[in-house]
Image (tube, rainbow, N blue to C red; front, top):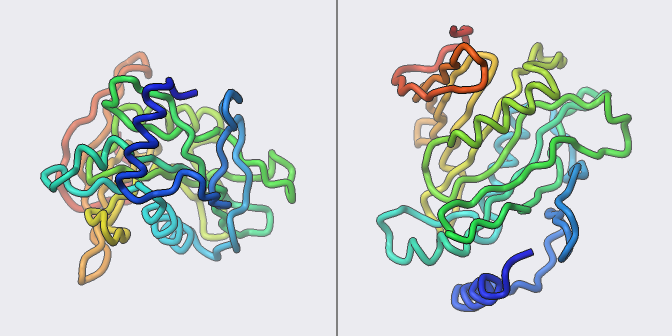
Length: 250
């Protein structure tokens, strides 16, 4: 639960930005005041998708246009104010026994940082889609937004690695093997947010990729690689610049 001083500050900032805290968004689930964090997240959100790409782009458009999901560019006017009231939203893309890709509901539950130095959405590890038994769902991608175009954090990487231990590196789909990954969407235009791109980490290949939407279409570049220490606990992010590769890296 937010401390009283932080809650009042949050409400005042929402008033200044012209946002109403009382509006109910049925796309979003969150624990009530005083309740524990969600242990699972319901699904689905909307209609199924026939491909992962369709689900991913629809999720980007959905998440990036939620209230205060974008703070703009760090050098823009009022960025600090927008950042203080911004929210990260997160969700799963999962694959069902009906051979469809589904998007879960969104949540913006987070751990409170009294220093206001970070914004982190806490994604539950499991999807609760009551049409299917829990063990029949396959987890394809953990999604969230970044408030501006900044790379994946070590915390993002630690989260998806924990999900790999729970759900596996990859899952069989009708399109072949789908590698579990973490994605962070971004947009540079706070006034009229659109899906400008996303950062992606794929544990199975250790690759960190950046996908950018341009006039010519989608462009992918590899921006880094995760290198693990011998204990398989510590890791470092090594910058790596070049075209994307589908090969497995060591």
